[in-house]
Structures are given as structure tokens and as C-alpha cells.
Length: 444
Ligand SMILES: *[C@@H]1O[C@H](CO)[C@@H](O)[C@H](O)[C@H]1NC(C)=O
Ligand SMILES: *[C@@H]1O[C@H](CO)[C@@H](O)[C@H](O)[C@H]1NC(C)=O
Ligand SMILES: *[C@@H]1O[C@H](CO)[C@@H](O)[C@H](O)[C@H]1NC(C)=O
Image 1 (tube, rainbow, N blue to C red):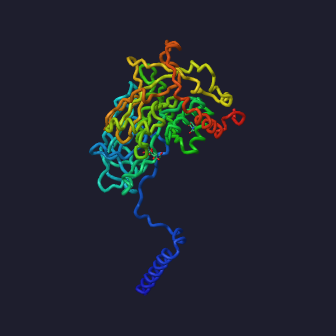
Image 2 (cartoon, protein in one colour):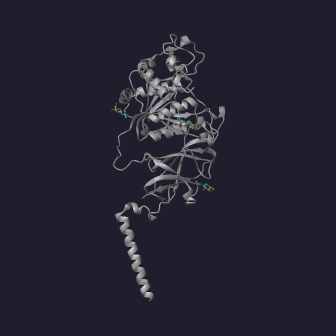
Image 3 (cartoon, helix red, strand yellow):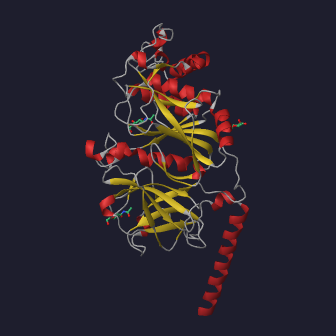
């Protein structure tokens, strides 16, 4: 009796198993409703970073982003971070390997040498990936044991080369990195003119780190984002600390240099590493302008030929004080009268830099040849550094005067921007119109 029951049970079990297998194979849409077998069990990543700034639990530090980087021997991954300098402690990398946790690896913590006296500093955290790990995500812990590992917030690892595509064609020739937008900055006209000038010079992408901006500029940037020319990266640094508006702690106080500019510049170099031939590190009110070539590509072909090993090109900054106007008013255009901001075409007088006093350079870099950057120089590079002659290329920087004591007669006339006016003006009009910022269509 008992034996019979067992037999029937087994038979029923066998039949139902066969039925399940049959349904699973023949009608996949039914299979979707059957409980999926939890194998292989994916334990990570449960939480992935949604913001560009992620506080690191039980520390005073912040993680920003993680990228593959095998250029320094013994390491595979670099986590760009912001560390509190007086609280540096040992940390351990934990990897998510195709859904499974890795063992922890002691991390190498490298503070950038430029901190300008601020308590927080841009820091690279470097780790090797343990063997047999197809790493998709990484995080940091304060303990070598995997405590509370499932609740960790994971950073996706960027710049992973897919197998067989190591020499992928670069998507962009030139990327401009605009480090920080903050306050209620609303200089729309100069912003639109500058972006359109970049386009004419051959820039493919402009990456902008945004803490906050004024209402009209916000509209303009939303509109440029839709076209794919501008890539906005949210940068809510003010939610986590008191960022400084200045560059020197002893002068302006605060937690971190200039809203985290040094961190965002480095982040942008790594973000661009596998997709852009060159990266321009300048501010939005600066245009890196070739004076002997029509665009950036022919400029770079020439200077790169002169210095094939160079990975960093220093470009001298030249200030065009916005208080001096070109006298004929030729480009004082009526359609721009209601658009807030500076009209760069109206400012043609340039200060000669006082080369004794200030470090007047910004940079074009080959991202794959630089390891750490600062604002005016690279901190660590694998290539040579080349200073481009100001006759060949210089920065047009319309702003308040730097050498305010100079009289108009002491400034040099420079109408290089005017060479582009025929294309530039209609393009600026189009961009402003698209954003609803031109004339009667404007929402002002
Ligand atoms: C951070 O620490 C708290 C308290 O120890 C814990 O409850 C929380 O889960 C931790 N979060 C992460 C992301 O590890
Ligand atoms: C980059 O420059 C090369 C040479 O000038 C050109 O052929 C190519 O189309 C450019 N690529 C992009 C994405 O603009
Ligand atoms: C810039 O950041 C502010 C504050 O978070 C946000 O309201 C605004 O939409 C952002 N603008 C763009 C163009 O991303």
C-alpha cells in the first residue's frame, strides 16, 4: 500500500516535470510566467549610483566614477573620488563580477598634488581586478571583510573595451570639457556664440558639469542637449559640502576648490578617453582659436607633426576686456538686444598677457596620454608637453579686464572672430530660436 502510493507519487512527479519541460520548450511565452530558477544567483549590483557624487559609507569621502585604466602597471581600475585630506584611511575595492562578489583587494589611494589648501582633494583610488572576475561594477569598503556588501552602492566601470573591438574607431575628434556651472549664471548670448564657434572649429561634443544655472541658460542647454551636441552631467556638489567659489583656501575658505573643478576636469578626461581624439580643457567664456588654420583638426595635424610624442598642448590665454566696444557697432545686432549676456563680436581689443605674473595657459590633451590634470597644467602624463605659439593658436577670452590699468591704446586690435561671422551669426540665431530665446518668440 505504502509502496503503491510512492509509485504513484513518482509517476505524477515525472509527468508534471515532463509537462513543465514541454511547456518551457514549446511555448516560451508561457514559460515567462513560470518562476525562473534562481541560478546563477545574481547578488550584485543591488544599488547602482544614480548621482555623479556618491558618499562613501563610514568615511568623509565621496566616489565620483570608475573607469578601466591599465596604463599604470599592477592596476586595472581607477575610481575618481573626492577625499577629505585629514581622514585618509585604508580602503578595499570590492568588485561585482557578472553578478557575483569578488574578494576584496587593498586599494592604492593617490591624492592629486593640487589642493590649493582646501580640506577636500581630488583623489584616485586604484585597484587590480582579482583573477577570474568579469568586473562590471566596483565599490569601496573600509574593511577587508565583505560586511554588508549587498547594501553597497556600486559604480559601473566605464571604458571597458569589448573583446575584439580594442581598436574601435573614435566617435569624436574634439570634446570640450566645461568644468563647472554654478550660481545663477545666465550669460546666454556668449554661451550660444561660443558653442556655435566650437562647432565651426570642428568640436563634436561639449560636456558640461552643472551645479545650477540661470533660467534662460537652462533653456538653451536643454535645447542643445536634445541635439546631442551638449552632454550635461549633474554635479550637485553643494548638497554634500560647502564648495568654494574661489581657487585658494586661504583667500576664500570653503571645503573644495572652485565647485570641484579639478575633479570634473579629470572626470571629463576619463569619460572622453575611449571616444575622443583630443580634449579641450577650457572655460565656457574661452575659445581656443587657431589663427593660422580654419579649424582645430588642421591645427592639430600641424602641431602634432612638429611634436609627434606630445600629448599635451599648452595654449596661451588672451583677455579681451568686455568694457571696450568696437566703435562701428557693426555686430550690435537688433535681434540680440533682448538676449541676456555678452556679445563677443563687439569686443576686439586684447590685453597682452603679463607673462611674469600669471600662468596664462589652458590645454588641448590627448586623453589616452594623460593621467591627472589640473586647470593650467597636467600633473601626470605619459606624453610630451608642447607649448603652442600664440601666433598659431590662442584663447579668446572675453571677460572683465585682468590688467585693468592698461589703456585702450595699449591693447591690441584682434578681429579673428569676425572671420567667422557669416556662418556664426545665422547659426547663433538658429540656436536661440530653437530654445525660444529670440525676439518675440522669447519667453522673457
Ligand atoms: C551605510 O551604513 C549604514 C549604517 O552602518 C547602513 O545601515 C547602510 O546600509 C549602509 N549603506 C551602504 C550603502 O552600505
Ligand atoms: C575627424 O577628422 C577626420 C579627419 O579630418 C574626418 O575624416 C572625420 O570625419 C572626423 N570625425 C568626426 C567624428 O568628426
Ligand atoms: C542644471 O542643474 C539645475 C539644478 O540641479 C537643474 O535644475 C537644471 O535643470 C540643470 N540644467 C540642465 C540643462 O541640465
